[in-house]
Image 1 (spheres, rainbow, N blue to C red):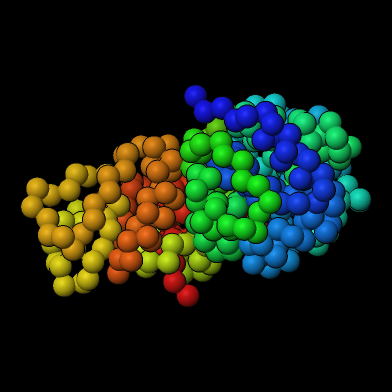
Image 2: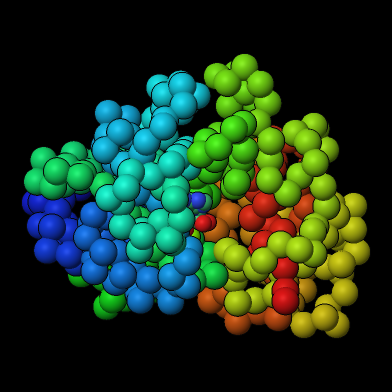
Length: 331
Ligand code: TXA
Ligand code: MG
């Protein structure tokens, strides 16, 4: 089990209090943290990431008891979801308290809140909340805007290097993709970003199936690649999604340059050196855990293509499909 020196956590909290940026691990991906009650500190996040100012940040708090500090008109569904899934990979969008800086919310009247399930993140948030009465750390994923989220401390250094005062190394992120985002700021419940916590799990707590933005319903079928999605979470190398049945056909043609293959089927016995094969687990949890680090590793090889074997199109794969579509999307 990975342990982080408490002295590093104290140092991180000291830096946050001084308005500096600190990258820290969560169970989903690494976050680029700043004191969420300090507009100048939050502004540094946008500068470091190269992120447009109207993109809101998620505020991380040490427990659900901090919800009322940041949000108002909190519906019962928010308390129920917090009780069921926090600490965990779920972000709740709620109406913000009047004092919450617009820099954090992208000028919106709502705020995203989450309690991460990583022991180091929780230690850091608790210690920070002892020192800061608002107790919130704004943290987007610790990558440059539009790039793949980092799942190790080395990824963060690679992305942001000297722009961060400190990178707290908490090992490899368990979940590997970003939190499920649920909007509770108006009537109804809507999933804005699919994640490890599935619509079915949410429905078990809510008593009804939430809507999923961009999808007609939460049925079993996941719609195919949508041209309207913006590129996000994208490696530099172009990504091509290929059906399982066509994979061998595609990789047997070496004329298309050098490529990486991300697949859950095994590499063929005889394969030329035009392809680098990376096997990924065939279950959604294992796949999500390995996805970003595999794409990042391919990027380092200077390949012409990344070929991804399409996973099944069932509800359990919704979050993985969301990231794959975005990785494959080109303007
Ligand atoms: O797992 C995660 O959520 C990670 C870790 C570090 O906690 N964070 C993360 O943050 O993925 P970021 O900034 O990369 O993605 C946050 C997403 C953005 O798409 C943003 O638009 C949305 O959350 N978001 C944040 N606040 C919002 C709000 N008030 N209304 C609508 N969307 C919001
Ligand atoms: Mg991000």
